[in-house]
Image (cartoon, rainbow, N blue to C red; front, top):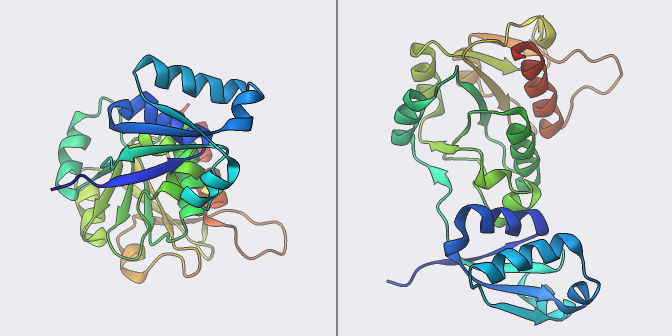
Length: 250
């Protein structure tokens, strides 16, 4: 059976792929005029590829656009599909292997790849132990997610679970406190104790947390809002929640 291929695009995504899964890369396609300008970020990627013997093909911008009609930043990697997602059965052994209290980020139905990519970037910067998403009604680690994540998708463990509510219950049984972000919550995010083993749970871009997800959180918290805007983008909310936890955990 033939192996699946995928096109990974963007400076940071391709660089991270070479750092973590270089053996999966079969060929790089690079915009010729970017090479002529001696772009230092691009040159660093080309040096890595050359070192491990990955073929590099110069292309025009039009040729790259045809291969990938996205904002590719002048570089594409033709790669064997890398399975970055981890399964539900891998979650318990992973938690057992941690040498410090779990710091989890859990999404209940984030479907926009740009939002998830931005959230993963914040998660990596905040030192999150793992990200957990449900199998249904949630975006996985698509090439767009990986491009927006700027390399974080290859670093942060990413678990896809079949039953999110059941997974939340399992996490609680392990002593992990779950805080769900909800605009109508009475408790402020800044008053919650986010030290120790915690999971921060955020809902979908439009509807927020589903009922069962809410019921399986230990506490609901709200980001204090001083202005007239009623809600924040999920990636913005994620960054605020994560770095309040970072502040407390320091």
